[in-house]
Length: 390
Ligand SMILES: *[C@@H]1O[C@H](CO)[C@@H](O)[C@H](O)[C@H]1NC(C)=O
Ligand SMILES: *[C@@H]1O[C@H](CO)[C@@H](O)[C@H](O)[C@H]1NC(C)=O
Ligand SMILES: *[C@@H]1O[C@H](CO)[C@@H](O)[C@H](O)[C@H]1NC(C)=O
Image 1 (cartoon, rainbow, N blue to C red):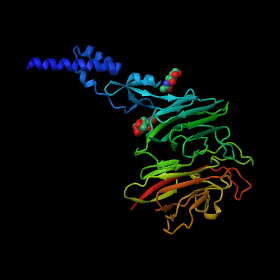
Image 2 (image 1 turned 90 degrees about the horizontal axis):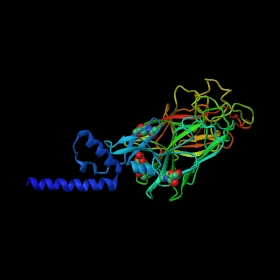
Image 3 (image 1 turned 120 degrees about the vertical axis):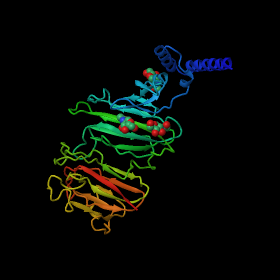
Image 4 (image 1 turned 135 degrees about the vertical axis):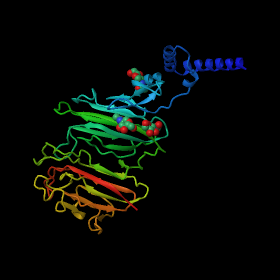
């Protein structure tokens, strides 16, 4: 009986050792380390089980995936530590200008990140699907500081353009740290991310974006065509390049420039959470500039900015506006009678129209003084949303 057991152990051990070298040199190495330390052979057949390729925390700016060392080297990844009880290696895949990737969770950074990037070239990353079950690319702008648009809201100095997918992505620039967009793949076609960065600027230009490939059945996937997608009962939605300081560039009419980006036309979807039937929007508190979409910010004071006096809606909103379908005014419960909102203030509204979508439209000129009222120093919007229980 004892003898039989002994031979079973020996046979298992042999199989395990063979599997090591076939599968992975890392396991072998770890096994040797452990063997040395403990001074005896540990159960090698435990290690033969392949570990899951889960996320592993790596650095402040990038997460890795737990892979075998050889796999990481094949991806030209960077090993930052061990994972899976030291059997795997935490592997970061990051790429910069002029690369191609088909690796899930690739980081796309400016050259020399986190240092400032002086620009001077067009920087492109081509993203191919990692497999044919991938439908969408989620792009998290973890850190995104480009030049501000011209005073008229056009991305002339720097620009991010994203092409090749099924989603139309507006050209954006400026400060977009924290924004996330979702781009549908057009079957096997690659999605190309291009950053144009004009040489010689005096600010700290840099970017770091995480590119997550989402399977068609992935719970985190955004509904088709939604450029942005929020989940959770509450949240804050900022327009692209929303910020708390004005753009220092002057417009063509020589008035204070805008942070609001020109030529936008996109939908922001909010997932309806279970047991919630309506959604309220209000402009972000403690910031009188948090809804400045049309009109003259410089010519208005705090009796206008962020108040009902500054709020404009309906047919008066023709150039730049947000659309909220069929809302009622929260304060009165009375229908707003319009779905377009613009001006220098936003009165809180609620809507039960489903799905929950907020549309954003801007025209080609964000510094127009020919319009009445003129657009001066607009910043865009920062809107807080709260879902309302059924
Ligand atoms: C790393 O992963 C954690 C947990 O999923 C997440 O909260 C964090 O934002 C990620 N960080 C980066 C830099 O991707
Ligand atoms: C890794 O780098 C080598 C040499 O630059 C290149 O030939 C290869 O295609 C790269 N592999 C991946 C997966 O990027
Ligand atoms: C890519 O990675 C993310 C997070 O690590 C995961 O949720 C997603 O399913 C992965 N995509 C594919 C196609 O495996």
